[in-house]
Length: 164
Image (cartoon, rainbow, N blue to C red; front, top):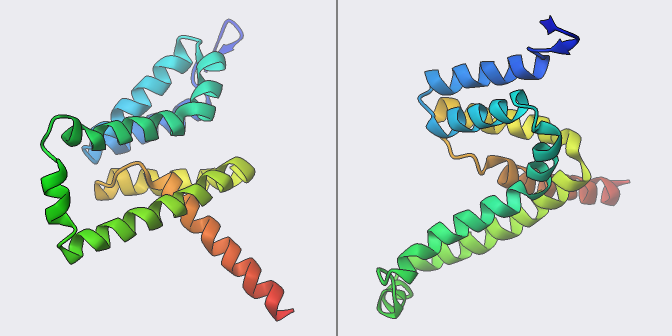
């Protein structure tokens, strides 16, 4: 749709409106809020300034916010040295520790992949959106997904170079 030489509804906006519908139907508040904020930024004309910033700094900002939320029980005193001491006695805690290390290392590869191969981002984002909308997943998927993809690609490179 065009008005005074401006395209009001672009392919990107239609895509986002479909995602909004998926979020509403899937009752996924995070997806709905994200889509509405991004459409608002686009439609008020701030996209040229805001989108590059969000694309470049969004993941580090989100990781910082997630880290803050994880640290809240420590700063409020809900988790202290006593709980830490009790946790190390549990093999579940050791599994959680190893899992935390593994996921952080996987995510590191994801950052590299998203920076070096942005075309892969589309598939990762669509996979994440599907998981969020249909399976009530959490939208950390692109980073972890990229990390897993990066590890799989490196393994494929290693096996292909070893075989021939």
